[in-house]
Length: 259
Ligand SMILES: Nc1nc2c(ncn2[C@@H]2O[C@H](COP(=O)(O)OP(=O)(O)OP(=O)(O)O)[C@@H](O)[C@H]2O)c(=O)[nH]1
Ligand SMILES: [Mg+2]
Image (cartoon, rainbow, N blue to C red; front, side, top):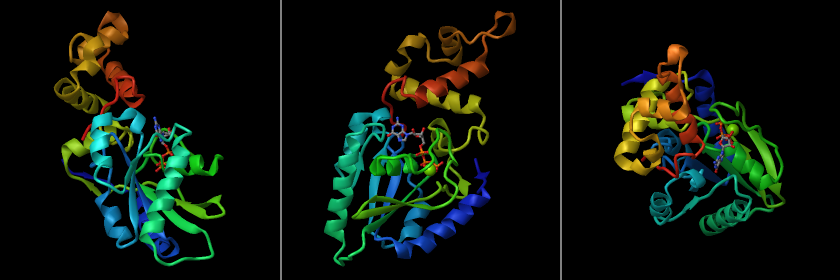
């Protein structure tokens, strides 16, 4: 599989990120705890170079806690649910602690931190949580943030929100499916049916308990249980594929990590 795509705004964002680097003291690389490997853009490390970079895994509430713990144990990594207000202090302590340890230079001005990551991982949600106000636009689909935006968190900290960027070529099939299943690439890029079937196979193998209520690990089984019935009473497999993805994304199949 070779999906060639690079929406124009992503090429623009890449340029913007490299131009903004000189303005910031550190970078938060925000990834999705359900995809601790596949949601880290290799391009970002090339872009951010030697800037102190911390890894934050968002959506920990949706991910397999055991897998998340393994990542956090590697160090300089924080896993949080951005839907949980208690994460605010954890994040502030983490960022402050990391910058205090890493940066020698002291400024009178506030620390400046840029938040980067692939689309839909929660960059704007993180900034809103820290700022305790809805300063940045968020949405449950990729491509919500379109330009960079500075947001004042406190007298000591300012953050730069950036649009999500991916890499120009999605070469590995399983990575494409993972990004599609979690909603990091738009649903139009890959057929929902294919993504759903891939997810189903993965769950049968790795998280069979997630499918317990469907009797069988097939799309037909999902359609029956979810009442996805088309005209004439036949099973509507397209609808079943859509419902399965919706439930997975909302965490209704349990806490699952795809990497
Ligand atoms: N369950 C859960 N949902 C989250 C979490 N963080 C963010 N979300 C949801 O994820 C979706 C995307 O959030 P955004 O903050 O818009 O993501 P973004 O990275 O800014 O996306 P782009 O601007 O498109 O690159 C929203 O529906 C958020 O509510 C989290 O920790 N847990
Ligand atoms: Mg955003």
